[in-house]
Figure 1 (cartoon, rainbow, N blue to C red):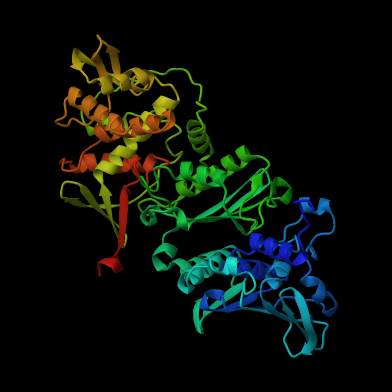
Figure 2 (figure 1 turned 180 degrees about the vertical axis):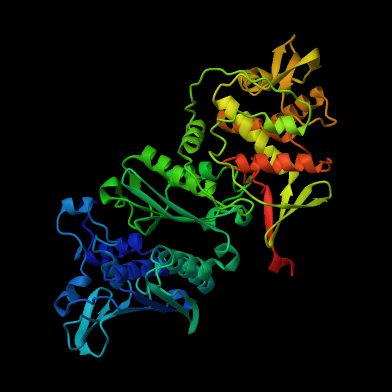
Length: 577
């Protein structure tokens, strides 16, 4: 007898079930999505012992015909697909006809269902995939599915389940994600007899976010609404005050289905860069709506992974959608918005290494004080708004020689003078660099020679173009020595010498040399801006404060310093009270 044999149907079904149903949360996800596909507007999920002993799902969908019930638990039996070509247009959550079949083969299942045309409901009891009985039963229009003793006949799978608390957390997270992507459906989750989650189903995503994430998150949301090339991007992102240490609150949905995709994460990371803070992740609940022909979700049994036909297009559209939302936030009480396409396109070309070709422009820039360093920008520069925001503020004072206090209406704002000026410097330096504008170099009367370490001189050699294109005029002068002929004409007249300014920047860069050239490039520009900007503890006059505020108001992106620290924080009168 040979070594290769055909597996029996029972073994095949158990293996298949293990691929689709990994844990109670996976079983619940499949059944709740079936409820939504059936048009349900109310779904109740009740569990016991983390879903191991009981899962009960009740919906008010259209129900299952009595004649279809036996077929519902057959493998590859579905009402959503007829032929292979339908995969190009199908937009339902389920379509393979495996969920109920898989769950019924590893549990005791009871299905009670009634359609509008039925007088009575039909009740079917299934155990380990075998139909035990089918009877009539009382019930409302819709479907109730009861799962008892999940994995009772697959001990290998059962022993790998986590404790009840952990499995409940997985279930709750699953229901929350489905609720976020379906705000028109009212969800209720009951754990061991206690209601732990309820959404209204009123269609307002912000209300679902309030229920799941709380008041602080819901009060700091920025709407996302963008459409391009047949792709619609909607949802909410958080403002700079609610960034967190992990990606757990950065959720992406494709046609309301929660998915995980490296292209989306990468695009979002670039769009949020400088807005969320170093090592932080912004809050985001974003749904991408597009034709099923744009993607393939049929590459993994759980359907969490997806492959897009045009990854570059998806990357650009999501980046643009998030960036537009970031730039639409109110600033110092001003809510005016405008067209940001040119600025966003320029930023996108920068992050993807497609630089804008422009003729070199020389701008004379005196360096007398902060007034000149802030005003040293081309009036037609794309980093500026077409029409500067207008505010009417009352100057209160400066706290700790760092935080500018102004009053606007019934709100008080603190402006971090260093973060604010750093953003202005950063936008200017980066804009000059990426547009190849030869400007903002202040030539020194007496050049300085600086001897460097091996590590420092190696960094200089590897990044000479970067250093020179951001305003430094330097040249190698021997094996370990450089000559500085000029420095960026941006810095406030602080106590730092030109020598100290350059060495501080070099020390910052050589202490963190990990990453590709783009990250080095970005960090260098941000470091130059940081070292050149007004420092905390420096005394500013009221006139200098006004120049700082007015120039912030002209920027398209004045919200944070390049490292993600907010430039302003708002306090309402009621908060003070």
